[in-house]
Image (cartoon, rainbow, N blue to C red):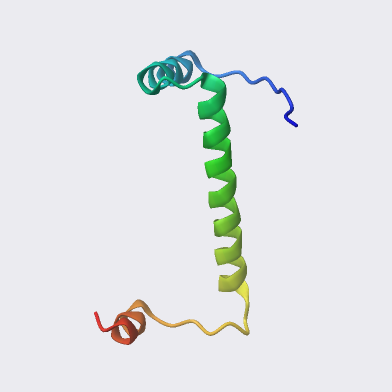
Length: 72
């Protein structure tokens, strides 16, 4: 099931969206849906990273230590 929503975009952004839709032969709706999905996935990843960073019981290592572990 899907739900219809509406949004307002600045003219320049709407023009860019229309251009990409035409170039990719996809609908504006499809592109906006994919953009929202991408944003929400990135937001979730960011929250996990911030939660781990703030966790006092989770050991942190430096980038130098990580490179050494990875043999870089």
